[in-house]
Length: 182
Image (cartoon, rainbow, N blue to C red; front, side):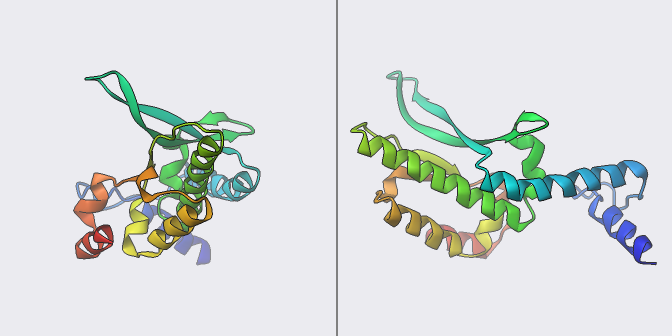
């Protein structure tokens, strides 16, 4: 019975959220995908400790004057078996868990360290754009984390630009708007 319930829950989670189909079946493909995702979540904790998540900076260019004015902090995972993974390979697995929070906090700190290193080496720092996962918008604790990082690395608020995904604003309701105002 326990195994049947577990399979039912897996099938329930596999139902597309687009509303076109409102059912799913448990099959071996679903089970394989679940096991892959579970393994990836377990590996993620160790990968964070081992600093296997790497920040890449994508320059933002003003095409009117051909000058870089900012950079977006993007994450990649240096996976021991699979090589360099794009966020599309792992973010969907992490998005509805506290793993997403841990990864975001890790990346935000990496961005702050980079900015501090630029300043300490007498380089003119560019503001870095940080992605804010929708999971953060349900509480203001992420603002406390960002404020703490800014204080720890002695950075101005203007050095971090927060980027919100459109889906967070359209599905979050009034709480999201209140959080954004803070």
